[in-house]
Image 1 (cartoon, one colour):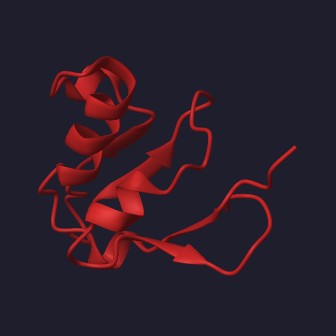
Image 2 (tube, one colour):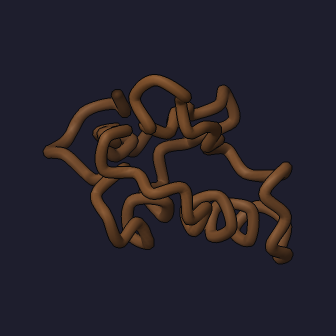
Length: 83
């Protein structure tokens, strides 16, 4: 059994571009359908301006979201399970 990659979440760096959701959904369905993604972005929060990043139950820790996140909202950390 292979270990999942550890995904670090930093909502302050998220700009809400949804690239992570698009790439994740493409991996699962072969189409750019954000509703099918295993990562969810919502916001921005009215008081802080930060976006909320959630990894859904179906996330298998593949790291594609982190690989395509240009701003560091989701990144890979060293070994272990996802955060």
